[in-house]
Image (cartoon, rainbow, N blue to C red; front, side, top):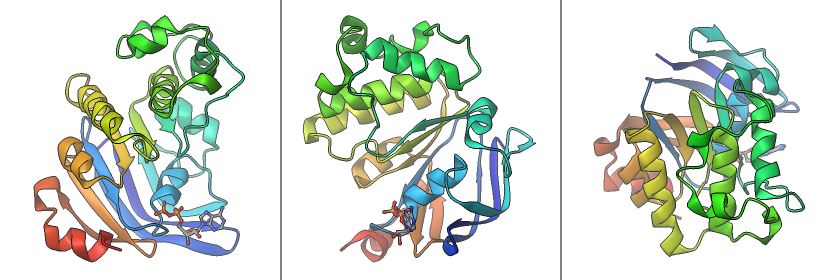
Length: 232
Ligand code: ADP
């Protein structure tokens, strides 16, 4: 397995937000993390990146125990991260935003790998444009390109379609599908759009109150499960 979580719990201060999280992800798989607001989806992704206050249990990436590693060493170990809200540097150019990614990862620093741009003609053609001037969808492309610049083994995407216009949601879905199916990039994404999850995911987990309430292959994600864990 490329990634294994064994009985992971995660805390903000003394508050336990996640508990009993165990899961496995094989090379090339796409796992969708689903559930209502506030159940712990973002915290799960942040836990993988070492961005919560403390963690119990064990997280193995590519045979390496990363549970105690700080965030930058997890990036080195192979996690690419597209945070919620994208966190583009608005005053910096497209090029500079992507360059930031090269300093976090395992590739050559200060050199943008060609393969992180060929999916994004808009970015290539607007290299000197300030990040803050891009639309939501374009910023999401930029956040993904920045994460790809560190040559990740596993791409973590936190609500990549959140706040994106409906017609662009489809485009982002297609691009993630390409990254996974054509390039074999392993992915974990939190997602509100069931349609996108069904389109891209191989497997899913439904979270509730900081735990995994249901898990399975994506074709086992029934309407009944969705109604139980996602309807408002
Ligand atoms: P989701 O992504 O599913 O909407 P989150 O992971 O953001 O859920 O939040 C899970 C729980 O953790 C919520 O109860 C939220 O209030 C709490 N939480 C999130 N971030 C923090 C934080 N920085 N400090 C304390 N509690 C937090």
